[in-house]
Length: 180
Ligand SMILES: O=P(O)(O)OC[C@H]1O[C@H](OP(=O)(O)OP(=O)(O)O)[C@H](O)[C@@H]1O
Ligand code: HPA
Ligand SMILES: [Mg+2]
Image 1 (cartoon, rainbow, N blue to C red):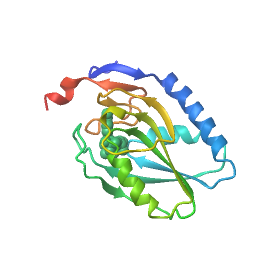
Image 2 (cartoon, protein in one colour):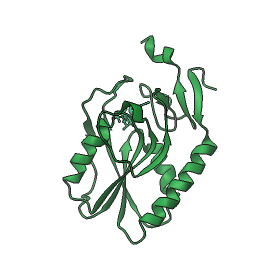
Image 3 (tube, rainbow, N blue to C red):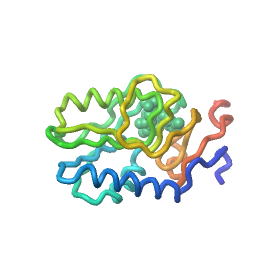
């Protein structure tokens, strides 16, 4: 195991099983709809690419890149769009795909920003939810796992841009970021 990891929360096998459940639910709910998955970069990159292969109906994808954590473990509270969507979402059945909801500030910002672009419908899918830290009220439609109030890395999720390539989801040792 990586020397900076305190504990593995979810293994590759557990993640794979959860993705199959989520994919089956989304497949059932979006029959006959005009599904557009919007991945929130960079964190949702790994989740999005695995999840979309578990959805068995026609869909399209787009990405928006936002950042509020930078190199820190605390949200700056200021959400910046780094890359906007490529196409209009007007009339589309938008499903936002996030890796983690922590304070909720990123999704609160995206919710208001994207709703003003008049999608046909708007729902939220997140792999991880850390409800204890919430600052904005977010209604989650599809959720993988609830997690404790710890700093998480792996499966696309970073600390200071590192650890995104770990195949599992883990708690980072506190001394890694407290000594900074
Ligand atoms: O609920 P919040 O407190 O807003 O935190 C969640 C957001 O923070 C992370 O992104 P980050 O801003 O670190 O950018 P990244 O996806 O490029 O890592 C994560 O990927 C979520 O998008
Ligand atoms: O626990 C976390 N880990 C990494 N990035 C994050 N962004 C919000 N919460 C987290
Ligand atoms: Mg991040």
